[in-house]
Length: 452
Ligand code: GLU
Image (cartoon, rainbow, N blue to C red):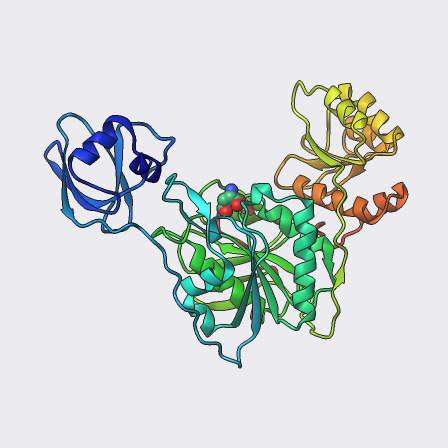
């Protein structure tokens, strides 16, 4: 029974493992159809099928082997239970910039859970530091765990809490802040911090990983090194995301927090700037700043903290056949703001007009962003757009729907005056509106024009 709960193996497959005298961590030989595989027997997900065993090969990759009546399993080495011991922290060099790493969870702070075989949050910021000792060559690193959760569990309350912790560290005199965060909702948090932390004296760099640090292809160490380097030394003081720019393991792109999006479910270069260029790039440890248009690092500046977010704001995607009752539902639910993700230049079906009008009459702020990735809303071109403008819908230019959602939550956390809220929504706070649309080359993966 203990074997079952510890390993994830059960039933027939567990009997086969037991009969061969094997335990988790043993080095085993598996002979199947004239092929021999050697590796360490590792636990697997308790939710998986009942026909495979999983071994970790010498090269670090895991291999699942389907066990048939012909398969032979033999133990050839003693079992050592997989474990992780955090290495001691490296020495600090007092001449280097001071950077604090705040950990919130996500893959960057994860390892394989040997109960379920799945990845779980397990590393604190100081563990991360121990795992990447090279950090001590670029900064004096201080660490703190703020949360230990996957980013899908992050809410407005976490954004507020995080913004407050960042402000406290900045007031204590750090030269830069790094936030280790899950990638799934990283761009939302980046937007939230961009609005809630204004007049920053130093950079706030958010970093994550698509592959956990116990995998050979992990991007955790390189992303973290890039983030700490930028946080400690960049001439700009903005909220940005530092992650792989392309699939090679030596280029990190630093993108402004309000203009970056997670675009791929699994690739390490998942974050792409949209209607924007990266702020900087690090190639083989060397930083190039790619724009002159940024807010300057200036330790004499005092951070302005505005950490309140309104929870009664929703993002509604329009699609063919959309039922306007969804908007009515939100009105009845007493929302204060609605961002509509419309089609193309900023449209929704005329069947939604009545519901939208009711929302506006009920003093709900209604903004419209496009579900196209590139380009900007222009509601003056077609009569549908003009009708919506006339109703009082606010066109949101080239602001992403996700950024617009976070911004409206933040706006309605600052004021409950409808006109003031509308004006604040339209004001460029952190570069969320770009002055111009970049040329078509920007679409190409990893191929960005420098914006000098
Ligand atoms: N879904 C988790 C998160 O966003 C793991 C993915 C990741 O960290 O990249 O925290």
